Amino acid sequence: MNPYEVLDIDETASEDEIKNKFKSMLEEYSQNQDQNTRQKVLVISAAYERIINGNLYKEIRNLIDNKKFVEAEAKLNLINNANSAEWNYLQGFISVQKGWFDSGLNYLKKSVELEPNNNEYLDSLNKLQSRVIDYMKKYSNKDVKPNSNNMNACGGNDSGGNGGMC
Image (cartoon, rainbow, N blue to C red):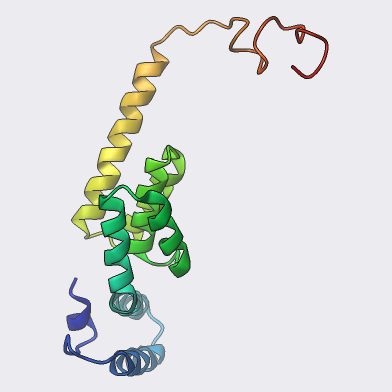
């Protein structure tokens, strides 16, 4: 999706021109509330958000490419737009890098819901789901038996060891 084409503006348009065009399109579509109109408003909003936050998203992707995940997450939190497919995609990627696969999977699912035709988002979601399934298969076949070191946070026997917290 080229956000400039969606908003029917030139790529050299100023921020004020972009905002004005976005507002006028929203006003135009707010007269009709059918399902097609709601979908069109979502597309227009996504295009507007991508243009306005585009440079910051590029910077965040660059930080991720350079494995600077803490900095990338801090910049992403400045935007904090859970209704943005790109925001959810990047948040999902960062979550996975932190080892938070469940959270990452949810963010990637949301990015695909918001932009179902985005192949990058869809491919990443499919790869992560495949990894999770492989992980589950691998560990569901293991015969893990309880022992004194995996049933008690303190280790040792189940009596609590020295009578205190640990």
